[in-house]
Length: 433
Image (cartoon, rainbow, N blue to C red; front, side, top):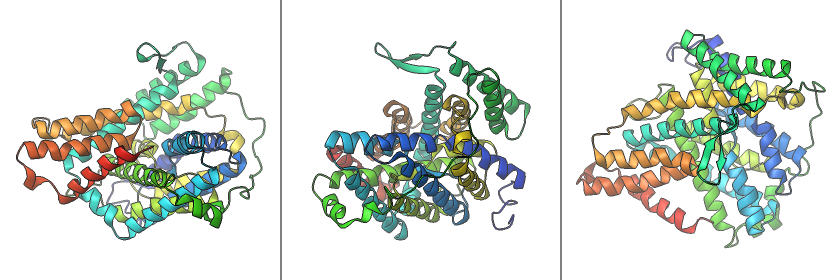
């Protein structure tokens, strides 16, 4: 096993990978609660979506761990499920069955692009500075998510965002989790992020902030309401209408670049990038696209490689074995959902803040002395948290990059695929719903 997952080459071991897998599981576990809630607002059966979500995560995460040897969790994208419900079903008035069929079609397109290795070529064509910008930008983005989930940053009508109420019980628990975790990190404890989540949960129960579960084991909801709906002939016909085609393109676009951005960030954080190339990128991308296809058939929205996987990287994850561990815990979670539901996002939020700070160090690798590189890199970084979208930050930065490089008379340094992405990003912003 250690030879297959390259423990020695990646300077890791069984214990370290196990702790990393458990850490990422805890950071991602909220999806089992949030995704069914969001998609149920589109009219989908909440229980069926819960089971579909769990099975999709297990399948996708196992595949990317075993097939591509990456410590990444694959799960329904929290941005795309919101777009599915609020942007497509509620805003456009599209039936959820048709929208799910659109997810399936986009997933098939993902697979074709992956099999032809087009996605891998695109990732390897991205300049090193922009790869560092993407990794750093995702760091700021997930830190912002963590601050919001902790209640430390809240919405403000006057200033857009503001400091939250620090005396709120859930926020105080998040602050405790944050402090105890960083103290363990500074002290040098392996798996500090995981232990921080466990300690905070126990403290939350002791002080009555977290209610203990009423039962330990729950029944598994049926998949029947959503299973194979995406391939019903009547919905396939409707999915190719002019109204739905831009929706399919959006699913394709956002999932592609969310996954590409996350893959670059995770590989950079784990120290796996060599000669500006992400190893096994094709296998990782094929794993993601296959998971999207399976997820659509089971009954959930588009999947993506999750930025929360960086929590496991911060805990020492370097190989696909941590993904195997993740999958095992998600498999158990299907049966122990009542226990899983008691861990609030305020407890997992500090993990995102801390890992975000780790990933933000990538920006030091950017050549800030050259304005033709610094400006697109900065826009890539800053627009991720400000637009709440990894893909949007990438798109804006990649539009600017060819322009600034041409202005600097460095056109020979621009890979031809960067021009293609420049045009595609412009088209995306033009036709996006």
